[in-house]
Length: 446
Image (tube, helix red, strand yellow):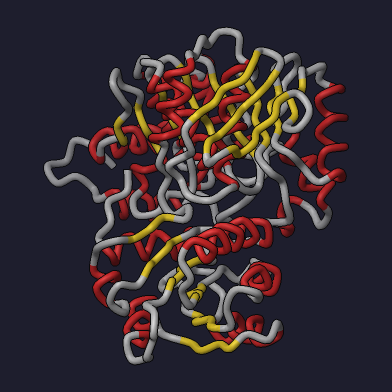
């Protein structure tokens, strides 16, 4: 198991080996994580200020805005996000002056091997050891701030080991991962609100009343100042610009680069977070530049070139989104509605989903926009939804559905149809599918 061998162990092989340390892919507890961090000499206590982000939808986009704004202000920003799309390096970004960089294969491999040796064969999930490795790396490299995204839930998530973050952030909460987090919105909100720490500012997106009640109760219990969208701060879209307002004043900013009306509110959440942390002094220019520059793959991402684009009908619009639940589908459908108002095109949805997702609720969002659904598999992914099951869900809501063996095959099939106007194609339903699409298309990530 030496990391000094002449031929380094491929990262994929190492990750497969680490996956064997615990039989369950997901097994929520903090005991294994706390044990390993003690063995690693508590790297989580040697970090710069941490912003901890939980929620159901919008976590990655909110972190993208936070990073872009902080970097525009000249700060070095470590970032940990999940899941990764094409390669694991995307999960760990190391802060540098002038902009962060994804961790290199060599440094990540060495750190994972070190964590493996220290763990000494004890049970631990792969996500836990990856998270421990990220925290260990962050402790080795100087930076000004850490952005930390929960993997699943919050209370027992492997990232919930920071005793006193600079802020806790809650993005919109909805029904997802019910098999782990609970069957009601209040139960899910309780799991996610458990990242709230005593006395630490909580910045919260607009929430359904059931979720908001749980968050308010937890913040009160922890005596944590609560900054809620629509109450303590407000975001609006005026003449295509983002207008943010709180008790400290108004910011009139350029529109986000990320597409969709929901991105204005994700950006607003990031702005509110940074304005709630007294230690950060962010000027208007940094907010403006960060909002306008922030990028996040597979969130209404336009694919304009690549192998899959070449396989589609000529002059098609191809959009990629990793949305996979009812709320994620709702915001994507709204973005498609905005596109349709600007330029009308026939819409085709190519969908692939994981088996534990509610396909009916996700696809229902597109019923008023298209009747053409192509169900595809998520290839070589354990737990992927069978194509026939996904197709049945589309039929139940009155959609015309067909199946294809892959996204590429679906795109090829569309070239045989006669379109008066080249179609608008959405590929969606899973971040795992999105990652495979980016890889197959040859689109760089990170």
